[in-house]
Amino acid sequence: MNLAVLLGAMAVVGRSLALVVGIAVLVFVLLRIVPGDIVELLASEGGFSTGQMEQLRQELGLDRSSPEQLVIWSINALTGDFGVSLRFQRPISEMIWAALPATLQLGALSFVIGMSLGIGAALAAAIWPKSPWRLFVEALNVWSVAFPTFCVGFAFILVFVLWLRWMPLLGNLWLPALVLGIDIAGQIAKPLLEDIEEARQSAYVRTALAKGVPRRVIVLRHVLPNALPSLLALTGLVLGGLAGGTVTMEVLFGHNGLGRLTLDSVLGRDYTVTQATVIVIATAVVLANGLVAMIGQLLDPRRGKSG
Image: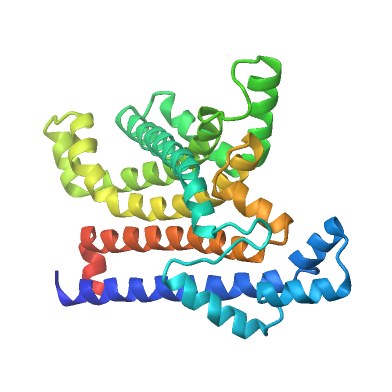
């Protein structure tokens, strides 16, 4: 690894850490702007007196200043201790670990479906340019741009769950994964095809075609490897959108993952749980994008020279 690539990797790590810190502070501030807190919510349910509410705030540490709360929370979070849920008095780390498998399962399946469909459609359209595959790529792109995943998920519930009764709503994994997968495919298929088409204009590709090398061999062995840096950049964008899409699908289809846990904590004014889940999701996305960026620098010699 040359010095330019090393410096580029260090810059990526620095930007990733700065993003995580910025997100943590922003979430902390936004949660404090929202009117009301967990004590007022519990008081409305249990009929606490003013004195009892003040005592509860002291026990929960809500009587301290916001900067002090942020510093204490940050120090504990760095050691993996996200504290205790203000609403349920359960360790937050335990709640996150319980919800994480469902989110990872849905996210991984959606990612595999989307990348397989998007890359496959782009390659098919490049190998057989006069086939319907090119129209399919355009349709995927229009679908991804024009139809929000929330609306598509709701439509899928109406059609496949309520009307056709092909599958249940709760605990369904394939339907939300298909919704997200089609959206992911639409995000990468057309840009990847355009990049492949651009690479096909190079001199060595024209020479290979003149020598009678099959188009399939040229695309798979020569053009696709040159398109990998662009594909990695698209993958980083997909991962960022997948985090938000997973939250939406978990709410729609009743998955008990991090998205559902985050929504419940927001509605319940459970600050500590909301902070922890948002930071975990944001950190995962930032680290994944940072890793994709570093791999892209290693694969693309132009980035290495310019870094």
